Amino acid sequence: MVSRHVPVAVRRELRREVNYSCAYCGTPLVQYHHIVPFHENEHHDPDRMIALCPTCHAEADAGTISREKLYELKNNPAISDLVEHEFYFESKQRMLGLGNVGVKIHDGQEGKSPVLRVDGEALIEVGYVDGVLQFVTNFHSKDGREIAQISNGEWWVSTESAWDMEYKKKTLKLWSSEENLAFAVRYDPETDQVDIVGRFHSNGKRVIVSTDYGVVVPELNFSIRDLAFSIGDGPGAVLDI
Image (cartoon, rainbow, N blue to C red; front, side):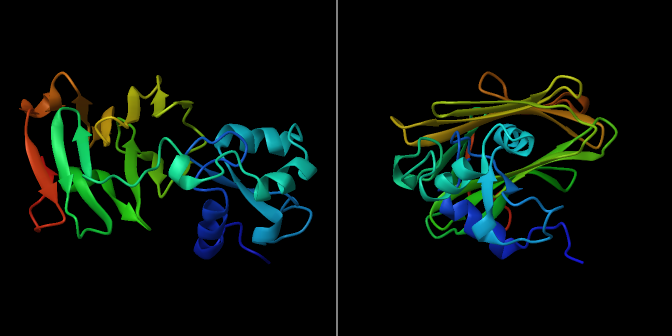
């Protein structure tokens, strides 16, 4: 019996095939669709699978996007050249804006490091993988359950949690009104910088990241703004709350 879990090597191959984005619409968060359905033939054959965003994945499951079209997209994805993609990029200055707190990623840093940690729990990690800036962002409910995650361009969400997603030119937004959670990331090509804002929960505490107020944890009377620090050049180079 074949596990439903898609092997790491297959997931990596499928992401690279479509330039780290949905093959159909270009949204930079993906899931893995079996063009030949798993219930018909239990497999994780990358030749019969494709990376799609959650919306297009549902459309493909419903048959709105045909199998023929999906096979065509494997060779001609929406994003034809990674260098031209407006979300993933190779930043020359390796700067990140966390609200209005500046984060410099050390030039020698490959792989991901935490940039925001609350009570020892990493909420946001960033780093370069194969020269592409990527994120790990963890979302928890008010009572502490993990309900969603962004990791290596993949989107996981629990079935009990409802989320909205919007991807427009240079900006990705995710939010859950019922959980009072939000995440937005924007790339500004003029400054060659990514900016992150959002609302999170950590161990019953609200964590707010905004361009107006920086990083705020109301329950701890904590706030920090207009600061800059580096990651990847020392063990303490992380915003620990």
